Amino acid sequence: MLELETPRGPAHVHIHPAPDAWAALILGHGAGGGVGAPDLVAAADAAREASVSVALVEQPYRVAGRRSPAPAAQLDEAWISVLDHLRAGELGGLPLVAGGRSSGARVACRTAAATGAAGVVCLAFPLQPPGRASAPSRLPELDAVSVPTLVVQGERDPFGIPPAAASRSVVLVPGDHSLRSASAVKEAVRGWLDGLRAAG
Image 1 (cartoon, helix red, strand yellow):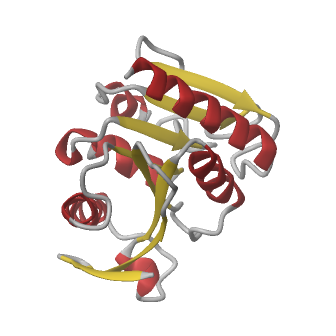
Image 2 (cartoon, helix red, strand yellow):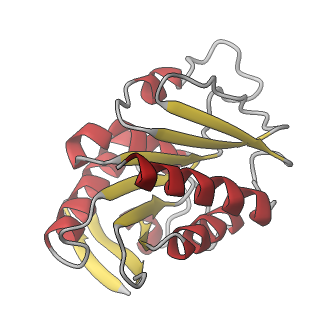
């Protein structure tokens, strides 16, 4: 486990290298959860089987013991700092695929251009807060991503289901926002990573 200093305090990074890696997948956690969430573990397993190294990132607010997430700008700032460090150090020379679950997926989308991500993996992207019809949709965050994107969404997710787009694949799996169907998540991520590699 690495402890990296960011402008928002220390972040923890758990790196799982893959033999002969051709890329690295960097994953962030949801707002109130950690890097041990079932879908993150499944995605990490899929990546390593696809010869992709993995880094699981704990945001500074979680490292500090807080459950309530920091404001979006602070999350983005810390995330960019971590990816800059990994690109220059432990994962140097590898294309970086950014991603995460729920809040972490939003961070990866918002910062995809700033981090030079080669792709984005969104697990349970929170499209629209349930029960808040007047709240703005988060679809613009997804639409702003210009690199290949995978969205893995529970077919009963109360946050809604994002639409597919030219460079965005949406895979529906059994379940809701928690994405506990590890085998389905793993299959979706593995297939997409293999396709990304084949596309060169």
